[in-house]
Image (tube, rainbow, N blue to C red; front, side, top):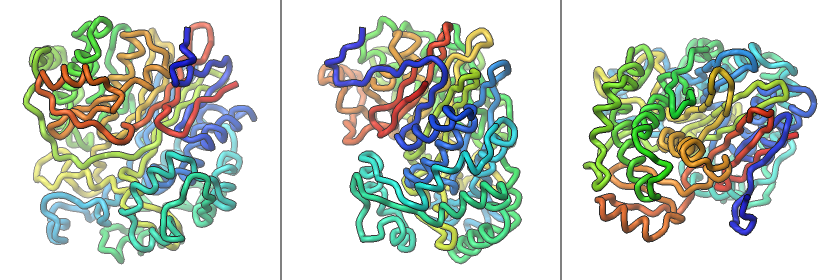
Length: 525
């Protein structure tokens, strides 16, 4: 029985269709599509488009997208909508531009060709049902006429506004300061972009006047982008078989590299050797931290563009690898910290949908850091991602920048099946934390029998950069236990990420959860 005095929200339950997002306007836009006969793909794209307008520091058409799609009577498919580096982006070219150690987030060299519009178009063309003008209607309305800023968006807007270029700041903080909760904001240039994409398809973004404006803007800043780079991006989104691993009788599906889904699967396989249902909270946090260090160390050394990391999934998920790594986890002490120098990955939106036909979509879209690169083309209103900042400037590294390469991505949608039946689309936001977050969430649901909402609301922890980040809701007794084992604790001042999930039960009941750390909700009918 749910404790209605707990201060938490109960799970959402319904019987036909459901959508869960991190923003109320995105959820309502997707629910409207579902209610008017659209399918899960239509609703997901409608919600993502709205969120590109109303949550511009987290996502946008200048970013990238990954999708897992599970048709009612078919196998899970993975869509890679991550953009590529310009054809002229070589290590030598960047070194000649004065870069030797890393690519700054606010550099034009951090801007890869956006993949989101290509992904939305491929997904809609292959599996959508309603026309794009109908799907984009709410996004166009909010961009043209304005929307009210929600509390979490306002907090994040204020925390990330410092990265904006002067031109972008003039547009995103027009009166000199970030909007407050309830303030009205419009983005009329984005309304034009959505109208053009709805009418003419991805060509309206990757070719013609819009592309010419974006390329000229980036080149004026020293970027290597060309019109051909953007034209090639029009058909850049590609379908793949997902990667997967079993966990306690369930099949967990992730997108293959260049995403970090393999790290999530590796953590789960390491956790599978422990009886997490009976361990204490301190034990669970400790084991998760140790598994995270091992998985992320291997991710950073081995994962990049799939053309440069062949067989990495098979190697990392092999039984011998799992057994060897699991043996390095000791319950009484923390291992020496594994330090990695990947840029911090913070800002993303995740949503999931199940329609009344039983189709399920797990969908994630991001511009990387808050406000991405901070670079906004004044001619088109497109705010560019900074995903190229995660490239390495190391000869021979699988994630070294190179012509038309895709960088390592942290954004990972998830999908769970059992005996061929779709059980749950799910996802966790929070950049680097996402792989750990997938494992922590699934363990809560599968090992401990928590509701989706309860598993999402659980206190979070993340072993990163030589410390163990914990949310302040972790009790003092647990903190003392963890410090005794050698963990260097860092108590966070703001929430760690977010998350959504929808579980499809055997009897057709849909159970949804949406993170209380964000503004969103799960709704259905």
